[in-house]
Image (cartoon, rainbow, N blue to C red; front, top):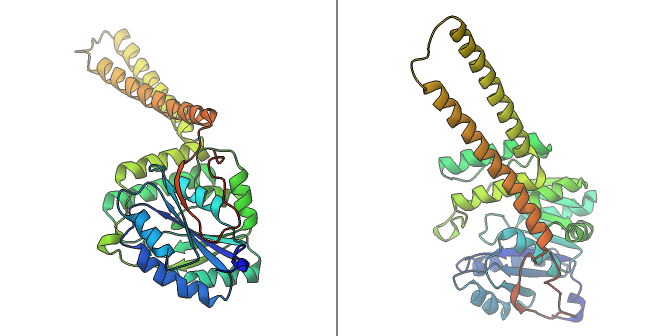
Length: 326
């Protein structure tokens, strides 16, 4: 790569977690698309603590593609940390964030680039026209999360993805926010910058492309996003408390009425049921409050979002500083 590639016009950030089998196919698919744009571009891979040969594959591919750079975390810090690191490391005037499993079609980059230049939009988002095949529990869980997120924040993320092209202005703002917990889709929508969308149908997953997310990880991710961007869990706790109070009030009126009429209760079923319900609500409430306190504690700790174990730099004028992003 010559010196005019030191400041590329387009950067593509790719979070990687156990994607060794997909990386070569990804590079082969995206390279002709970016070349057709006739501009300077780069690929930035972020290995999020993969347990397979992903990093070795990235190093191998770097010998074939001079525009390829990479970062390797010491362990798995999560996809949001990988996106954050990739945005810190990228140098392009426009930045595309996309997955390595080819679920985000590389050919759409051309349409995104043209749309951004024609409209001046700071964000061009890839939006699914349908959800890919998935289990019933995962599909229902996703719809519940998107419904709750929209109701509590006013931001509709249904069928949205992390597949986005953003301007350098959006990147700088995203990096300047000191929040430790980050939700790329939610935060970029929250900014309110002019946004355009391109629609696509996600291709059918091959065996090597199965999602690396398990149900537990998705639940924690969804809960963390709701806590970070919404007071809905706390408000739900208040509504549950009001409902419990109303139930207890009606039960108390009924008990007093029976007592004044000389009717004795036959057992403690009502008492036991009341204790169980109230106790359950209290424990759930403590858990929700504890979740908010934990997020406050993590923010106060000011630990870095990620730690870089190794860097693969290709024709860069100067190394990037990673461990300052908290």
